[in-house]
Length: 283
Length: 171
Image (tube, rainbow over all chains, first blue to last red; front, side):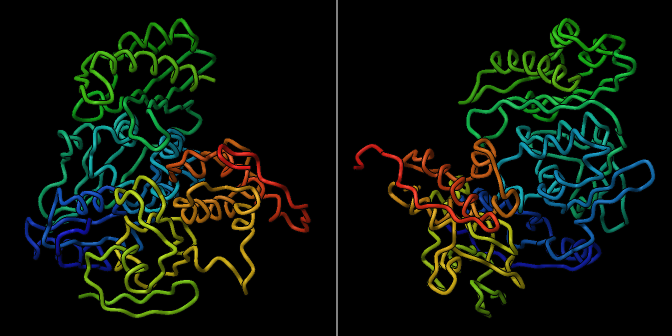
């Protein structure tokens, strides 16, 4: 199918994009990589009157070191993020999770910022951003503001990005030397996660000094598995501690039931995948 | 209307298009490049895969206006001077197709994969073409074809012709 008619704007700076968004009013839609938006437009699940394409803003594709952060432009494609040396070295969990997103063609077009702003609870990158305490830089008419990941994901497909605002950058603290793994369960190669678990561990002398764990598709937003984290800290990284910590994986979750999986099955998956992810991270 | 200037298979074009026109529509309906096919129309199957500035993309999920200023390579631009691309030859030799509908997309995905990883093992081939579905489920010979193409594309390679693996209903 063909999308409904719309006007198309391709600004060359963030300021121009914010101005275009203000001019277009609430019926405008931001186009990042288009790998979620274009299918939605084609199926006519949405019919915005104006599309504002951020593809002409070269600055938004940059990945750079910024003090104790790795700053990733919202328009950096998944393909670039997963291969970037800075990301591999300092935010390996993001690199690993991004490599599991969709397929090569989609990763060439789809972007980190687009996926996070879309906020599909089955998307893989929200759990990573949440577990790693990423910060979201959001531009609007009155300048930019920074929102922590803990406040960014508000609800099903809903984020803290307000009307007239654009996500421009995602900033990750460095987790250099941490042991990380993203364990994803889906039915077919390119499918969304039925459930997935993001784990980052700082292991010191064989025992877990710090743990960060995020869950994908276990509620209307990504979920931080604080119970698992608390159970892991101070433990040796082994099968017993992984299994014991994994028992906490469903705390605070509200797993959906759908054609892929009932909620109790997702809860089972969350426990199993948490155990596997911890062991895989610990190597 | 919006203007799109694009190079497709080495030829420059400048056209006025509706912003909602998909790249695959532009290629097929405006330029007559019907070698690129529409499969699922929901960005799952990869039959419409082309290269945009050297990277594989699903042309049903890109607007023609997003290709403004870009270089597009379709299945029709792969052969050089009447000589098939090694990946095309390998799909022919190894019978990497059944009904053939997924073939243009499979080949474009495989060319991208081999550009990235000239010597993929079987798992890497399967992961490299995970964005492309074969409705005949003929993956076995598709994977063989890609591995065969990798051999053929090695510098100085001279590989003997191989007969295709037997397939159901084949000889």
